[in-house]
Image (cartoon, rainbow, N blue to C red; front, side, top):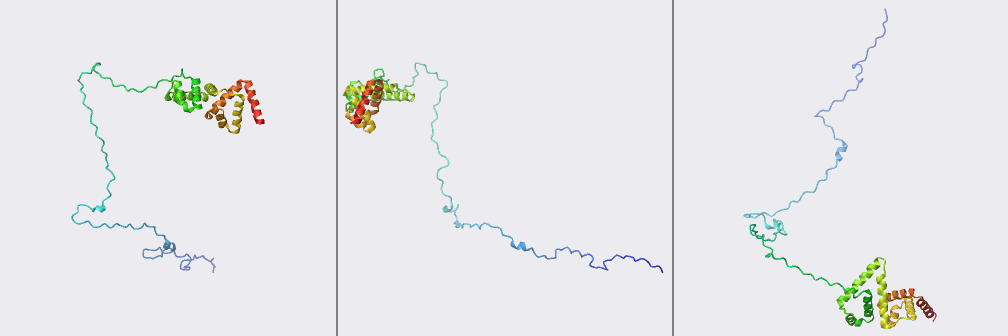
Length: 259
């Protein structure tokens, strides 16, 4: 007897029922599955509060509209403003003859007063400075001084304003011709009325400026206190041109300080 080789017989499902795991059955519509745990914690939407309806009173029977308390408030003003009525122009006759030059009336000319020119040739800056010095020294004689010079108050004010503007305009351009002429004539008129100023008088003015008593010194010398700057400018200009006067003022100042 011939021995045969062993034959391999593969296993079958009958031999091993658990060789392959069974496939899960697809769920059907009739099967119930519980919801996921996270689905129970879903936040609800924030809804606005419910509108409160206004309860309106019933409209009485027989009225044609709502009650007056339900109507809107009256208007503050009319929607349309009536413009003033303007009369239309008179009709023009296109076929009427044109008026001649003899019959045409010219419109009335409006007359405007033209200011008279200032008499600057009769009242230059030197003469106005002398008048100003006399008025500053004796203000109670203003009307008489103006009458002596043939002036009235409005004309004098116009002349004075004109020369003040001229001095300021010249100073703005770096010049002082009018200012020096005014100061020299101003001081000359004061000396003509009260007498010439000596070296001692000038030394007193210099020392008063240092000590802060300028007004009192000017009043004591018979000079208008309000015109101290014009007097000092004229005195400095005079001392710069006269060496003897300058030396006398210096000696008087040293003597006054030593005493």
